[in-house]
Length: 198
Length: 380
Image (tube, rainbow over the protein chains, first blue to last red):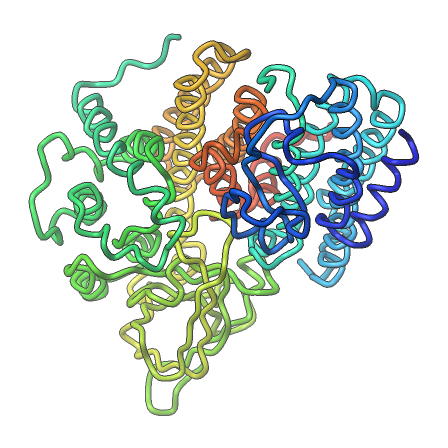
């Protein structure tokens, strides 16, 4: 489990969301999705599949499909997949934070690089800390469904906090935030929440 | 839940806005999918009414229903209306034509002739306006802007610079542009600019949400600005430029906060409609009611003292964060696949993020909020 989560994080960080999702979904088909919609790398979508159009997902190489049937999938398998997806999202967020630091290092406010501002440094420190904490949560409790669901909710918060560092430029479709946003939608398709179930 | 008692006029305004919100909701997804095709919505009675209501009385082309009379009279009435309207959909509000933030700036800084020019230009109901302050590398640091008004040997000024993340950047026909005439903060001035004009180019940017606003980039390359188009000429030096526009920012921040809160209510309504006994619903309702109380208190405070940036900053910071949090609650409550199963919900997840950077990011707001509450060092 620990190795597969790390591998998913590494691939997503280096190659992006579609590549990371491809690794996380190894051996899992669309019909195993807990809800009515599955998220897949576009390269894995079967010809003739019912695809829900989504512009940003398309740009990330991700497709949302309506499976024609339901396959049996145990709770353990679902939790393990959600754990690997957590790794993917960690890789995406880590990449976003790195780009945010680069972005803010090149901007100047009041004669000082924005990255040196105390409010900004505090945010970056919190992001790094939370990334480490979530990674350990997935590592030690990747088989506990509530813990994995908690990790995903915190990853959504983490992605938003990192996105804010870009200001309005983080709101561009053709920007680094897109992948993190789409990764939230991907997780929404595969992760069972405690309250909502499937 | 107990809240403030609204007077009868405000209750009527609220109820009318709730009816209009239903129409706004019905158009929401179409505008998001194709924001360039918004013109076909502009003649809708709902958008026409909102356009008229946001125009000062003496420039209105048609009368307003009596119950709408309160709309422009106070920050409180506008905030109350914006909550209810955004509860239908905030995205289409940003797609409508009308004075918007530029109107607030013209009201604050314009002389009689400039107001006349601005509002007469909007009379056709087909004219979008722009408020061009933010620059590509300056973000929310308005005092650091580099666009400049330079003396034109032929009279007036020449405007040069680039603005970014401006609503209606490419399609706006008239608006307010900020630039500096010199190095100090007091030298930051605003001018009315009509487009198209030689030396101007604008294009829309592909944004994640609030797509109806058509945020974009504006480039000014020696655009001629006649002297009479410079705003604030009739005001004292200290009130002519960015500081004079401060009141407009404060009023606008409250309205953005109101829209964020309206969107949060919309999310809550939507979730409870589809899953009436969602866990946490009672707490969510309480927090929304409390945020609305805060909003109303701040709006009343702005009506009394419009120059104080702190209360509007507090309410915008809070309601934006609350609305973002509501998207996570909705996702949790509706379960796996819910964001793709419910396109409105997914759209709102994108829209809500825009409030963070509109009219001051969270960190800029924190800088407005903190100084007054910082502990005072005791003297020995």
